[in-house]
Image 1: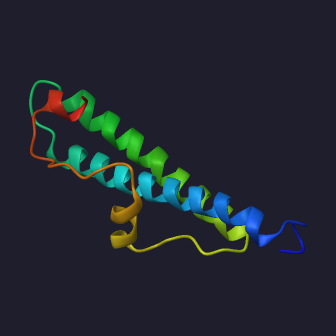
Image 2 (image 1 turned 180 degrees about the vertical axis):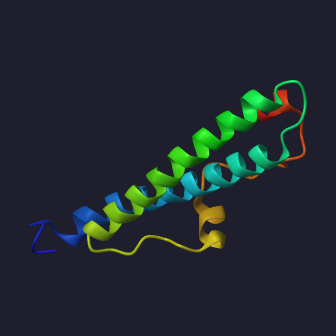
Image 3 (image 1 turned 90 degrees about the vertical axis):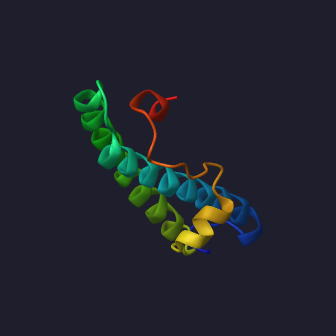
Length: 103
């Protein structure tokens, strides 16, 4: 890591946290897409549009986070199984009421 003038032992905790953030973003992104596709009820139009707005924003954040990891000369995680293992956000069923989707 000469170009950053930082030692690996100082960078590794940052890379671990960035990969955790990346995993969280991926699970969050998928939850938003699932809700976008499956929302029903009286709030359909508002939530359908809001979920799309949110997952579009998260998609950008995913890319920026992965590129930040690459800038540090490490590889971002890229396997869904790894994301599920370390993410602090858990999967939920997309088959729930519109109100439960936003709780």
